[in-house]
Amino acid sequence: MGEDIEKPEKVEALNVDSKKVNHDYVKPSAHAVDKDSWQQVGVMLVTSCNCAYVLSFSNLMLVPLGWTWGIFCLIMVGAFAFYANWLLADFHIIDDYRFIRYRDLMGYVFGRRLYYTTWILQFLTLLLANMGFILLGGKALKEINSEFNFTTMRLQVFIVIAGSVYFLFAYLVPTMSALRNWLALSAILTITFEVTLLVILLKDGKRSEREKDYNIHGSKTDKIINAFGAIAAILACNTSGLLPEIQSTLRKPAVVNMRKALTMQFTIGLAIYYGVSIVGYWAYGSSVSAYLPSELSGPKWAKVLINSFAFLQSIVSQHMFCAPIHEALDTKFLRLDEKMFSKNNLLRRFILRSIVFTINTFITALFPFMGDFVNLFGSFTLFPLTFVFPSMIFLKVKGKGSNRVEKSWHWINIIVFSLLSIITTASAIRIIVNNARIYYFFADT
Image (tube, rainbow, N blue to C red; front, top):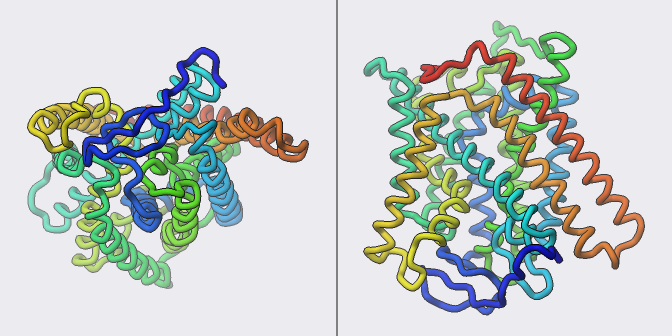
């Protein structure tokens, strides 16, 4: 495979949780592998994709596209994301080597350059996603505060509170597998706040006195640019760019179980977050807010419940998106010969989590404008990670044994989605430049 990177040794998979040995071919990891059922991972994917980000999807995805193109793009991007993740799951084991990290897989197949490219793309995505969670958590807390008219506090105060709570959870629940004890609660919170949200959206949408405008506004150039930004946002709501890391937690057979979990995400999960997005757009039209709860007519208790449960649920769901960063740091700095909750590892993990969440919380408080940057990194990082790289792997690993149709299909995927990545990235940069006048440090949005 890649000639300029060391071949991974056929080593035993170590993890500090159990000190047990798994006879798979992986590099050592501080986090547990091979522990989780596909049902557990499926619920994690469903709840993580139906997190507080859902409250922004109507504005981000449908307002720039309108009904016809919006529904078409929702279907097409969702279908292709399902296919691409299904394909990538098949490369969990290559040449008897098991890959629990995306960057290791790309490095083994293509060499050191793609190893570091994947590392950068993936970690940029995950760090930005975590900042987005902190921002949405802060907005939810600010909305609760405004409902009770307690005190007028800036958004930054609530961002710091959200970041601190996320830090505490990540410290006490150190790995992705450790989420198993919290997924039932996360599912209850998800169902409760989204059902309540849907009921109010349907009520608001039926109000005859409300005038709804579904037109796409702006100049022709702005419409095209915003449309490509919306496509990037649709991709961001459907995929995470960390499938190999999620798959590493599954029991054998990991490929079959990963595909079962993906099927749960792209049926049950997709129906929920697409449903909320579509009903939100139907209820308010092109004027729908970037944060849906601020648009709701009430009652007061329902708005408080939605914001409270969305924040509490995000504590659990944000952990999945940041877990690969924690795994990389833990594997580098924790003592692998000791348990995860040993005195030494507790102290080291406290320092590592503190660094991650202090930096992310500060940047979020400094620059609380995440919507445009979700589009940017969705286009710049998720298109390659989701669509381009899996087809590249297929051609490298299975190309010789595949027929002309299969080769042509994957080359088309590589070319089309590479071009789409370039176009959507340029579009996202243009949107940021156009909106630069509203950006300022420590904005109380």
